[in-house]
Image (cartoon, rainbow, N blue to C red; front, side, top):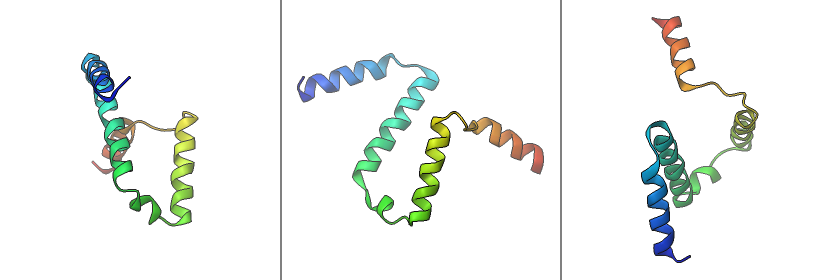
Length: 80
């Protein structure tokens, strides 16, 4: 598969997505692109910061995360 074929295939797959799935794919793609454009940010983190981020990612992988909506609701209830 050449570059043009890959781009067309990717476009078709993105074009078929709707709503939340499209937004998630967009976010993932931007994160991937941005992470490969400026790796210096990661390299500037302390070991403790890297460990904390890796811990958070592993917690998400285990399904221990909370949704954005839940967090916002909690803080609105607490501080409103």
